[in-house]
Image 1: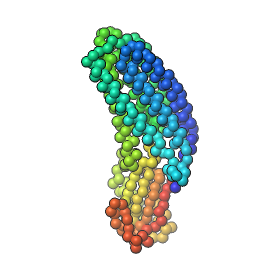
Image 2 (image 1 turned 135 degrees about the vertical axis):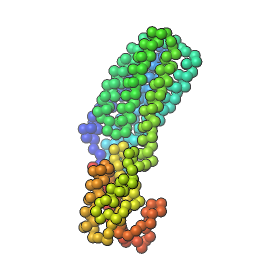
Image 3 (image 1 turned 180 degrees about the horizontal axis):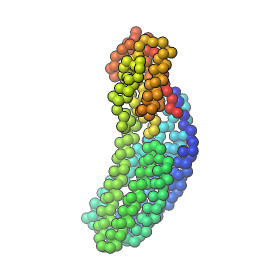
Image 4 (image 1 turned 45 degrees about the vertical axis):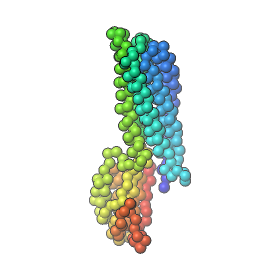
Length: 316
């Protein structure tokens, strides 16, 4: 049972986009850090930290893309499909911590405002909007899984938060109110949290092998039981191998018929699962007698003779 992954044009393009994004983001981190210290702007320092986390996110995504193209082997029979999911979880969890730090620091500055230089804020932020916007657009074109989608959300969120820094700098320049800077930082922290919590929930569900989002086991079971020749479906499990790869394992009760006839039922089941539920990797065990279902399906030894061969499908 193997999951084959080949680099392909999509992976090569994603790798190129990530390398370019890494170089540009690192340069911008240095610029925002220096400018933030010079302008005494927490918003810019927050942007520097945010972009530093983006650099790490992009770096981990790049590593994940590399591992994802490696083929399965005897030690890792599903290959490295979970690498990108794990990276996305780490990225999002890191962003949550950074958002909390920005929020705490912003609350402190609201009680003790610091004089900032709004023009420096605006100039640096304007460059950031262009950079982050271009990177986000490039990532959107290659975001095929949760790993690259999390990187896209990083950069898209940065584009919005950096645009807010421009507005904040203009507000300070016009009104002279320095509390705008930490207030803006709270908005940035909220944006980071909003985008990150969703990724954490999705990746945790995959890592814990939960039912894929938007799928209902009763619907899958009902659809399979509508196939001619199927008596019932039990011990049904559906999970994600990676963000774009779903797997299913179950026991199917059929009449006591020859294997040549059951093969037709199996073909219909696999077609149904691929066409209607986007499940390409299946492990279906046929039985022509009942099977007790306690903590899974474990049939007594004398009943095992009633089970037909274990059939598995392949992810292509």
